[in-house]
Image 1 (spheres, one colour):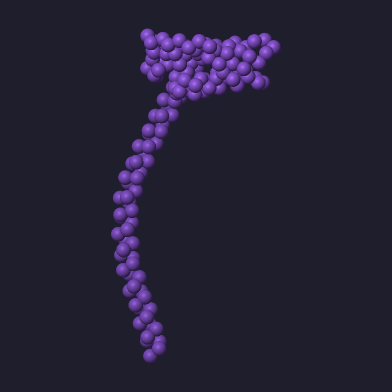
Image 2 (cartoon, one colour):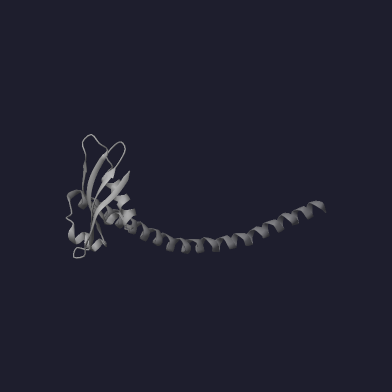
Length: 149
């Protein structure tokens, strides 16, 4: 896919770069995500700051034009762009997974805190058992000596 930016306009009030350009591609028209990735690399910004407004293809040709906005930061993006239903749903899912991850982290820390206490309890009886084993070995040696004599 070949992308050529024809118009690059800096909009300082909205903290964004407005791009209009053309693209050449082979096969299927590139998706918004693919074009956003290419534009993010060219402008050296994060892919989440790129918003594609349109991709228009020329009928019968593998060419097209696009318009896109590249924001300076996420705050400017959230103030300007309207949240659609699917974006709201996606944001809710991301928030839910983040909350689940935090809960799992807290549980893991709680288990780690409990585990050393349990290990200390288990280690104490293990020391006592080791003390009993040599006594058993000594008894076995005494029986051998008695059997030899």
